[in-house]
Image (cartoon, rainbow, N blue to C red; front, side, top):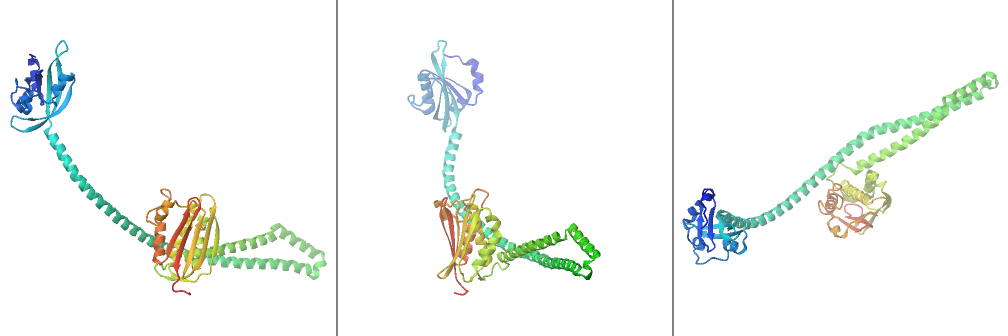
Length: 424
């Protein structure tokens, strides 16, 4: 018989139940926690005490300890003293004598009923949560679609407001530039006339001195020589030549600025919501002036403009479409390439084609390029709204915009608009 008196106080302080069984599965010791839970079972078979069986079961941890000589953890169920079914986590271990033989098996029984019930409840709740999660995912997808639609509509509205603001700003800037520009051109023209009069006066003065009655006298010759010397010393002839060249160059620059202002006013009109008769060739010319800085270093520009009738349209919005297509064409070209613009009449419509020799669009993305927020550009280089807005503008005009593209070969966009309200 094993003497456990020295360890009783320690074992009784453990909140888990502790039993020790001999090799015949008789309980030879149990601590206070075990007695409280199952009553005094000393001298009884362990399998009687736990599950009212008439023999040891295969899942018995102590049995496996006797067979293997190693510790093991098993899970079992047992009826407590008050008749309640409990789930136990039993840590079983061998006890050896001085010769190393197993003389008994120890078992620490921890009540994990709450944990088991909690696990079952968690499992049930997980199933319920899974169903709720599926419903939530469905609602989330619906909300995401609604949010995307709302965001798209909001951004398009902002874009329209932005276009209107740009139109007002451009018109104001053009007006402010136009007035001083007119003064500059007028003053340069006057300065050019004055310089010609000064040159004519100097030439007449020299001719008068040379042809005067006293020209043969030494005094007249000395005076003429002195005038020529002073004229050469002061660089009057060079100054007059420079003035003429400066005036001509300035007038040329002024005319170019005047043309840019006119194109700017034509590109961004104030009547954003109004349809009027307009010629697409003129709209393309004004748009090209605005975006020329984006194109000139990237591509050679070829224009083939046909004889187009005026059509009823919103010129500013169509200019916005052309600007987007031209900038996209330039951005698609990595080093140097070519951009072709062609306009022509096609039965009862007019067509504008803008083609580039850029990187092209992958075939699997061609059918998505007009979708909102879809872009083939790198992150941070495109919003995915330019072509979507262009598509909406053309659709609003009852027209069509299509694209043909091959990877590494370039792209060709075609805008077709009906002829309405103009000369047929």
